[in-house]
Image 1: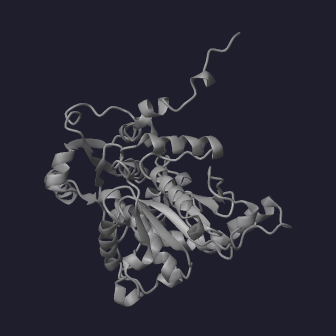
Image 2: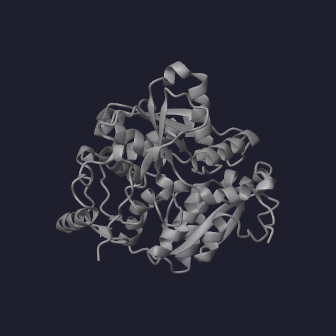
Image 3: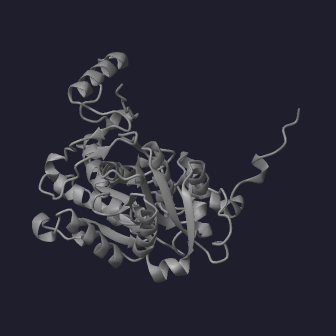
Length: 404
Protein backbone atom coordinates (compact mmCIF):
# COMPACT_ATOMS: atom_id res chain seq x y z
CA UNK A 1 0.00 0.00 0.00
CA UNK A 2 1.10 3.51 -0.75
CA UNK A 3 1.84 5.92 2.09
CA UNK A 4 0.50 9.47 1.82
CA UNK A 5 2.71 12.05 3.50
CA UNK A 6 0.35 14.86 4.44
CA UNK A 7 1.84 17.69 6.49
CA UNK A 8 -0.29 20.51 7.90
CA UNK A 9 0.24 23.99 6.56
CA UNK A 10 -1.22 27.31 7.63
CA UNK A 11 -3.95 28.50 5.28
CA UNK A 12 -1.80 31.33 3.97
CA UNK A 13 0.99 28.91 2.92
CA UNK A 14 -0.99 26.39 0.90
CA UNK A 15 1.15 24.78 -1.79
CA UNK A 16 0.08 24.70 -5.39
CA UNK A 17 -2.21 21.72 -5.88
CA UNK A 18 -3.47 21.69 -2.30
CA UNK A 19 -7.10 20.99 -1.45
CA UNK A 20 -9.48 23.66 -2.75
CA UNK A 21 -11.72 25.14 -0.04
CA UNK A 22 -14.83 23.62 -1.64
CA UNK A 23 -13.48 20.04 -1.59
CA UNK A 24 -13.93 17.94 1.56
CA UNK A 25 -10.83 16.45 3.20
CA UNK A 26 -12.01 12.89 2.55
CA UNK A 27 -12.64 13.57 -1.13
CA UNK A 28 -9.30 15.36 -1.43
CA UNK A 29 -7.39 12.42 0.07
CA UNK A 30 -9.04 10.12 -2.44
CA UNK A 31 -8.10 12.43 -5.31
CA UNK A 32 -4.53 12.65 -4.01
CA UNK A 33 -4.24 8.87 -3.73
CA UNK A 34 -5.48 8.36 -7.30
CA UNK A 35 -3.11 11.05 -8.59
CA UNK A 36 -0.11 9.58 -6.75
CA UNK A 37 -0.96 6.08 -7.98
CA UNK A 38 -1.16 7.34 -11.54
CA UNK A 39 2.27 8.95 -11.13
CA UNK A 40 3.78 5.78 -9.67
CA UNK A 41 4.49 7.44 -6.32
CA UNK A 42 6.37 5.30 -3.81
CA UNK A 43 5.64 4.46 -0.20
CA UNK A 44 7.99 4.46 2.78
CA UNK A 45 11.29 2.62 2.17
CA UNK A 46 10.41 2.21 -1.51
CA UNK A 47 12.97 3.18 -4.11
CA UNK A 48 12.57 5.88 -6.74
CA UNK A 49 14.34 4.15 -9.60
CA UNK A 50 15.25 5.91 -11.73
CA UNK A 51 15.29 9.12 -9.72
CA UNK A 52 13.84 12.02 -11.70
CA UNK A 53 15.53 15.33 -10.77
CA UNK A 54 13.70 18.66 -10.91
CA UNK A 55 13.63 20.06 -14.47
CA UNK A 56 15.75 23.04 -13.44
CA UNK A 57 18.51 20.68 -12.21
CA UNK A 58 18.75 18.69 -15.44
CA UNK A 59 22.07 20.25 -16.43
CA UNK A 60 23.87 18.79 -13.40
CA UNK A 61 26.01 15.66 -13.71
CA UNK A 62 26.12 13.02 -12.41
CA UNK A 63 22.44 12.72 -11.47
CA UNK A 64 21.63 10.16 -8.74
CA UNK A 65 20.16 6.93 -10.07
CA UNK A 66 18.04 6.14 -6.97
CA UNK A 67 16.38 7.71 -3.94
CA UNK A 68 14.85 5.73 -1.08
CA UNK A 69 11.83 7.18 0.77
CA UNK A 70 12.83 7.61 4.43
CA UNK A 71 11.20 10.86 5.56
CA UNK A 72 7.79 12.41 6.09
CA UNK A 73 7.63 15.15 3.48
CA UNK A 74 6.73 17.90 2.91
CA UNK A 75 7.62 19.28 6.32
CA UNK A 76 5.37 22.13 7.49
CA UNK A 77 6.01 25.87 7.57
CA UNK A 78 4.49 28.27 10.08
CA UNK A 79 4.95 31.79 11.38
CA UNK A 80 7.43 32.09 14.22
CA UNK A 81 7.07 35.01 16.64
CA UNK A 82 10.62 35.17 17.92
CA UNK A 83 11.10 37.26 21.07
CA UNK A 84 12.49 40.79 20.61
CA UNK A 85 12.33 40.73 16.81
CA UNK A 86 10.96 44.04 15.43
CA UNK A 87 7.44 43.98 14.02
CA UNK A 88 8.73 45.06 10.60
CA UNK A 89 10.58 41.74 10.18
CA UNK A 90 8.58 38.55 9.58
CA UNK A 91 10.10 35.21 10.52
CA UNK A 92 8.71 31.80 9.58
CA UNK A 93 10.15 28.37 10.34
CA UNK A 94 10.45 25.33 8.06
CA UNK A 95 10.17 22.32 10.35
CA UNK A 96 12.70 19.84 9.03
CA UNK A 97 13.04 18.77 12.65
CA UNK A 98 9.77 16.95 11.94
CA UNK A 99 11.14 14.95 9.00
CA UNK A 100 10.63 11.66 10.84
CA UNK A 101 13.02 8.77 11.39
CA UNK A 102 13.26 9.30 15.19
CA UNK A 103 13.76 13.09 15.04
CA UNK A 104 16.57 12.88 12.49
CA UNK A 105 16.10 16.37 11.08
CA UNK A 106 17.96 17.48 7.98
CA UNK A 107 20.02 14.27 7.89
CA UNK A 108 17.04 12.34 6.48
CA UNK A 109 17.11 14.11 3.11
CA UNK A 110 20.80 13.35 2.55
CA UNK A 111 20.46 9.74 3.64
CA UNK A 112 17.65 9.16 1.13
CA UNK A 113 20.26 9.42 -1.63
CA UNK A 114 23.28 7.97 0.18
CA UNK A 115 21.56 4.81 1.41
CA UNK A 116 19.82 4.30 -1.92
CA UNK A 117 23.32 4.16 -3.40
CA UNK A 118 24.42 1.72 -0.68
CA UNK A 119 21.52 -0.61 -1.45
CA UNK A 120 22.08 -0.36 -5.20
CA UNK A 121 25.72 -1.38 -4.71
CA UNK A 122 24.75 -4.43 -2.66
CA UNK A 123 26.40 -3.21 0.54
CA UNK A 124 25.61 -5.02 3.79
CA UNK A 125 26.67 -2.33 6.22
CA UNK A 126 27.36 1.40 6.64
CA UNK A 127 30.23 3.27 8.28
CA UNK A 128 30.15 6.92 9.28
CA UNK A 129 31.85 9.29 11.72
CA UNK A 130 31.14 12.28 13.94
CA UNK A 131 31.14 13.72 17.44
CA UNK A 132 29.95 11.81 20.49
CA UNK A 133 26.51 13.46 20.17
CA UNK A 134 26.42 13.44 16.35
CA UNK A 135 22.89 13.84 15.00
CA UNK A 136 24.09 12.48 11.67
CA UNK A 137 25.50 9.30 13.22
CA UNK A 138 22.26 8.67 15.09
CA UNK A 139 20.21 9.27 11.94
CA UNK A 140 22.46 6.92 9.97
CA UNK A 141 22.09 4.22 12.62
CA UNK A 142 18.29 4.42 12.42
CA UNK A 143 18.09 4.62 8.63
CA UNK A 144 20.48 1.69 8.23
CA UNK A 145 18.22 -0.51 10.34
CA UNK A 146 15.18 0.62 8.33
CA UNK A 147 16.90 -0.85 5.28
CA UNK A 148 18.38 -3.96 6.90
CA UNK A 149 21.98 -2.75 7.04
CA UNK A 150 24.41 -2.99 9.96
CA UNK A 151 25.84 0.31 11.16
CA UNK A 152 29.36 1.06 12.41
CA UNK A 153 30.02 4.44 14.04
CA UNK A 154 33.31 6.16 14.83
CA UNK A 155 32.61 8.76 17.52
CA UNK A 156 34.94 11.54 18.66
CA UNK A 157 35.17 11.95 22.44
CA UNK A 158 37.42 13.55 25.06
CA UNK A 159 40.61 11.84 26.26
CA UNK A 160 39.10 11.55 29.72
CA UNK A 161 36.04 9.64 28.44
CA UNK A 162 37.21 7.74 25.36
CA UNK A 163 38.17 4.54 27.19
CA UNK A 164 34.90 4.36 29.14
CA UNK A 165 31.44 3.17 28.19
CA UNK A 166 29.85 6.13 26.33
CA UNK A 167 26.56 5.80 28.20
CA UNK A 168 23.02 6.41 26.98
CA UNK A 169 22.70 10.19 26.94
CA UNK A 170 20.95 11.84 24.00
CA UNK A 171 21.79 10.43 20.58
CA UNK A 172 23.76 7.56 22.12
CA UNK A 173 20.54 6.09 23.53
CA UNK A 174 19.02 5.71 20.06
CA UNK A 175 22.24 4.46 18.48
CA UNK A 176 22.65 1.74 21.07
CA UNK A 177 18.98 0.74 21.08
CA UNK A 178 19.11 0.06 17.33
CA UNK A 179 22.31 -1.94 17.75
CA UNK A 180 24.93 0.30 16.14
CA UNK A 181 28.55 -0.75 16.72
CA UNK A 182 30.39 2.19 18.31
CA UNK A 183 34.12 2.80 18.43
CA UNK A 184 35.55 5.93 20.06
CA UNK A 185 38.59 8.04 19.18
CA UNK A 186 40.01 11.05 20.98
CA UNK A 187 39.64 14.56 19.58
CA UNK A 188 43.40 14.60 19.13
CA UNK A 189 43.37 11.36 17.11
CA UNK A 190 40.50 12.69 15.03
CA UNK A 191 42.47 15.86 14.25
CA UNK A 192 45.83 14.24 13.55
CA UNK A 193 44.57 11.26 11.53
CA UNK A 194 41.54 12.90 9.92
CA UNK A 195 37.99 11.68 9.45
CA UNK A 196 38.59 10.32 5.94
CA UNK A 197 41.56 8.20 7.01
CA UNK A 198 39.71 6.88 10.07
CA UNK A 199 36.86 5.82 7.79
CA UNK A 200 39.34 4.12 5.44
CA UNK A 201 40.90 2.21 8.35
CA UNK A 202 37.52 0.93 9.49
CA UNK A 203 36.46 0.09 5.94
CA UNK A 204 39.63 -1.96 5.43
CA UNK A 205 39.08 -3.94 8.60
CA UNK A 206 35.50 -4.74 7.67
CA UNK A 207 36.46 -5.82 4.15
CA UNK A 208 39.14 -8.10 5.60
CA UNK A 209 36.37 -9.66 7.70
CA UNK A 210 34.33 -10.35 4.55
CA UNK A 211 31.91 -7.43 4.83
CA UNK A 212 30.87 -5.02 2.06
CA UNK A 213 30.53 -1.63 3.80
CA UNK A 214 29.33 1.70 2.41
CA UNK A 215 31.24 4.74 3.68
CA UNK A 216 29.43 8.00 4.47
CA UNK A 217 31.48 11.11 5.31
CA UNK A 218 30.93 13.56 8.18
CA UNK A 219 27.35 14.86 8.12
CA UNK A 220 26.55 12.97 4.92
CA UNK A 221 27.93 16.02 3.15
CA UNK A 222 29.33 14.97 -0.19
CA UNK A 223 28.07 15.66 -3.69
CA UNK A 224 25.56 12.79 -3.61
CA UNK A 225 24.15 13.60 -0.16
CA UNK A 226 23.77 17.25 -1.14
CA UNK A 227 21.11 16.22 -3.67
CA UNK A 228 18.82 15.87 -0.65
CA UNK A 229 18.71 19.64 -0.26
CA UNK A 230 18.67 20.29 -3.96
CA UNK A 231 15.50 18.16 -4.09
CA UNK A 232 14.26 20.08 -1.00
CA UNK A 233 14.06 23.26 -3.11
CA UNK A 234 11.39 21.72 -5.34
CA UNK A 235 9.33 21.01 -2.22
CA UNK A 236 9.93 24.53 -0.92
CA UNK A 237 8.89 26.15 -4.20
CA UNK A 238 5.55 24.42 -3.94
CA UNK A 239 5.04 25.87 -0.46
CA UNK A 240 6.27 29.46 -0.74
CA UNK A 241 5.99 30.52 -4.39
CA UNK A 242 4.33 33.95 -4.55
CA UNK A 243 4.51 34.32 -0.75
CA UNK A 244 7.04 37.22 -0.87
CA UNK A 245 9.79 35.51 1.09
CA UNK A 246 13.13 37.30 0.79
CA UNK A 247 15.61 35.18 2.76
CA UNK A 248 16.32 31.70 4.08
CA UNK A 249 18.65 31.06 7.03
CA UNK A 250 20.05 27.87 8.51
CA UNK A 251 22.86 26.40 10.59
CA UNK A 252 25.90 25.20 8.66
CA UNK A 253 27.91 22.35 10.17
CA UNK A 254 29.20 20.04 7.45
CA UNK A 255 28.15 22.11 4.44
CA UNK A 256 25.87 19.84 2.41
CA UNK A 257 22.57 21.45 3.41
CA UNK A 258 23.90 24.92 2.65
CA UNK A 259 25.44 23.90 -0.68
CA UNK A 260 22.21 22.26 -1.85
CA UNK A 261 20.00 25.18 -0.82
CA UNK A 262 22.32 27.81 -2.28
CA UNK A 263 22.58 26.01 -5.63
CA UNK A 264 18.88 25.11 -5.69
CA UNK A 265 17.72 28.68 -5.04
CA UNK A 266 19.89 29.87 -7.92
CA UNK A 267 19.00 27.21 -10.50
CA UNK A 268 15.28 27.11 -9.68
CA UNK A 269 14.76 30.85 -9.75
CA UNK A 270 13.65 30.89 -6.11
CA UNK A 271 15.14 34.27 -5.38
CA UNK A 272 16.08 34.04 -1.70
CA UNK A 273 19.10 35.44 0.07
CA UNK A 274 20.77 32.39 1.63
CA UNK A 275 22.34 32.88 5.08
CA UNK A 276 24.52 30.07 6.42
CA UNK A 277 25.43 30.38 10.10
CA UNK A 278 28.52 28.29 10.71
CA UNK A 279 28.69 26.39 14.00
CA UNK A 280 32.29 25.34 13.43
CA UNK A 281 35.26 26.24 11.21
CA UNK A 282 35.29 29.58 9.35
CA UNK A 283 33.29 31.20 6.53
CA UNK A 284 36.30 30.77 4.22
CA UNK A 285 36.39 27.05 4.98
CA UNK A 286 32.71 26.66 4.12
CA UNK A 287 33.02 28.58 0.85
CA UNK A 288 35.93 26.34 -0.21
CA UNK A 289 34.40 23.07 1.03
CA UNK A 290 31.00 23.76 -0.52
CA UNK A 291 32.65 24.69 -3.81
CA UNK A 292 34.21 21.23 -3.85
CA UNK A 293 30.78 19.67 -3.28
CA UNK A 294 29.27 21.75 -6.08
CA UNK A 295 32.09 20.91 -8.48
CA UNK A 296 31.37 17.22 -7.84
CA UNK A 297 27.74 17.80 -8.86
CA UNK A 298 28.74 19.39 -12.15
CA UNK A 299 27.90 22.85 -10.77
CA UNK A 300 31.25 24.41 -11.55
CA UNK A 301 31.29 28.19 -11.69
CA UNK A 302 31.64 28.24 -15.46
CA UNK A 303 28.44 26.24 -15.94
CA UNK A 304 26.14 27.76 -13.28
CA UNK A 305 27.48 31.30 -13.43
CA UNK A 306 28.19 31.64 -9.71
CA UNK A 307 30.73 30.49 -7.15
CA UNK A 308 29.78 29.22 -3.72
CA UNK A 309 30.49 32.67 -2.28
CA UNK A 310 27.87 34.10 -4.62
CA UNK A 311 25.30 31.39 -3.80
CA UNK A 312 25.19 31.96 -0.04
CA UNK A 313 26.51 34.25 2.68
CA UNK A 314 28.47 32.46 5.39
CA UNK A 315 28.63 33.97 8.86
CA UNK A 316 30.26 32.86 12.08
CA UNK A 317 27.91 31.53 14.78
CA UNK A 318 30.01 28.99 16.69
CA UNK A 319 30.37 31.17 19.78
CA UNK A 320 32.69 29.47 22.26
CA UNK A 321 33.18 26.52 19.91
CA UNK A 322 31.50 23.54 18.27
CA UNK A 323 28.92 21.96 20.61
CA UNK A 324 29.99 24.32 23.43
CA UNK A 325 27.01 26.36 24.59
CA UNK A 326 27.31 29.72 26.28
CA UNK A 327 24.79 30.57 28.97
CA UNK A 328 23.48 33.38 26.76
CA UNK A 329 22.79 30.95 23.90
CA UNK A 330 20.92 28.54 26.18
CA UNK A 331 18.94 31.41 27.72
CA UNK A 332 17.88 32.31 24.18
CA UNK A 333 16.84 28.69 23.46
CA UNK A 334 14.81 28.66 26.68
CA UNK A 335 13.18 32.02 25.87
CA UNK A 336 12.21 30.85 22.36
CA UNK A 337 10.80 27.58 23.70
CA UNK A 338 8.70 29.36 26.32
CA UNK A 339 7.46 32.00 23.87
CA UNK A 340 6.78 29.82 20.81
CA UNK A 341 6.81 26.14 21.80
CA UNK A 342 9.60 25.44 19.29
CA UNK A 343 12.63 23.80 20.90
CA UNK A 344 15.96 24.48 19.24
CA UNK A 345 18.96 22.23 19.65
CA UNK A 346 22.09 23.66 21.33
CA UNK A 347 24.62 22.75 18.63
CA UNK A 348 23.07 23.83 15.31
CA UNK A 349 19.73 25.60 15.04
CA UNK A 350 20.01 27.17 18.50
CA UNK A 351 23.27 28.89 17.63
CA UNK A 352 22.07 29.82 14.14
CA UNK A 353 18.79 31.37 15.35
CA UNK A 354 20.66 33.20 18.11
CA UNK A 355 23.02 34.77 15.58
CA UNK A 356 20.17 35.55 13.15
CA UNK A 357 18.36 37.47 15.89
CA UNK A 358 21.59 39.29 16.77
CA UNK A 359 21.99 40.30 13.12
CA UNK A 360 18.41 41.56 12.87
CA UNK A 361 18.70 43.58 16.10
CA UNK A 362 22.14 45.03 15.26
CA UNK A 363 21.22 46.01 11.67
CA UNK A 364 17.49 46.84 11.78
CA UNK A 365 17.54 48.89 8.56
CA UNK A 366 19.10 46.00 6.58
CA UNK A 367 16.37 43.59 7.74
CA UNK A 368 13.43 45.99 7.73
CA UNK A 369 10.58 44.63 5.58
CA UNK A 370 12.23 41.22 5.13
CA UNK A 371 10.31 37.96 5.26
CA UNK A 372 12.71 35.31 6.52
CA UNK A 373 12.36 31.53 6.48
CA UNK A 374 14.45 29.77 9.12
CA UNK A 375 15.26 26.10 8.50
CA UNK A 376 15.04 24.08 11.72
CA UNK A 377 17.41 21.18 11.10
CA UNK A 378 16.58 19.14 14.22
CA UNK A 379 18.91 17.82 16.91
CA UNK A 380 16.56 17.82 19.91
CA UNK A 381 18.29 14.84 21.57
CA UNK A 382 21.47 16.90 21.89
CA UNK A 383 19.73 18.93 24.61
CA UNK A 384 20.12 16.07 27.08
CA UNK A 385 23.89 16.58 27.24
CA UNK A 386 23.24 20.16 28.45
CA UNK A 387 21.16 19.11 31.46
CA UNK A 388 23.46 20.70 34.04
CA UNK A 389 23.48 24.08 32.26
CA UNK A 390 19.76 23.96 31.54
CA UNK A 391 18.80 23.26 35.15
CA UNK A 392 19.95 26.78 35.99
CA UNK A 393 17.38 28.19 33.55
CA UNK A 394 14.21 26.40 34.60
CA UNK A 395 11.95 27.70 37.36
CA UNK A 396 12.13 25.27 40.31
CA UNK A 397 8.79 26.54 41.63
CA UNK A 398 7.07 25.04 38.56
CA UNK A 399 7.84 21.48 39.65
CA UNK A 400 6.56 20.38 43.03
CA UNK A 401 4.75 17.68 44.98
CA UNK A 402 1.00 17.75 44.43
CA UNK A 403 -1.04 18.07 47.61
CA UNK A 404 -3.60 15.26 47.80
